[in-house]
Length: 207
Image (cartoon, rainbow, N blue to C red; front, side, top):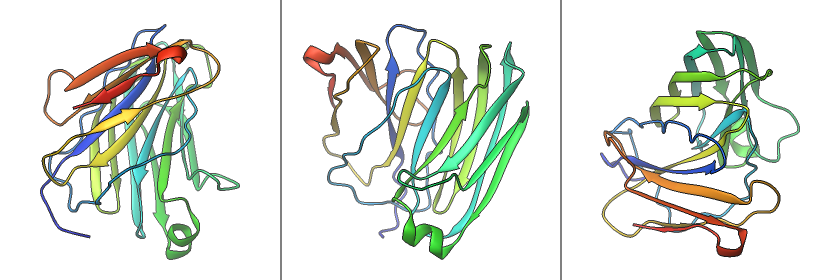
């Protein structure tokens, strides 16, 4: 793994039928960079939750801290990896809420490379203006999130080592019929690029 001061890019997929969530803003200088040529994996978009996909390929401490306002008193934080039989850790409670987990060599060797942090609501309230801070082996992420009954979001954190084209294409089945995909960088007041579309013309983002 090469050492660099490159920053992550986030591709956010959110239901266009509801109010889109506020995009988290990553730390501008992660400790290292993972070289990515292409990435393809299934995702599940659901209301009442925001899912963060994090590249974790070495053991170490994972800490997720949240605080929020709104009508939803309690939230649930779940840490897992796609394909695993059970979550590594789960924490539920009122704001502020924190989850800790120490990833072992066995976890890393047996888990899918992209781990998931899911922030979800067990009720029908809204967690608005949520503040998020995550620390995981090799990097950290901080910013904002929303959790609402009519909004779902998937955030894929991509370390970028240098200049070049970033592109993404999404395909899905089921509701909603239309999605919005956004590309966001650190310390930006607005997304670098955003594109929406339906199943007949899947969103394709290039920057």
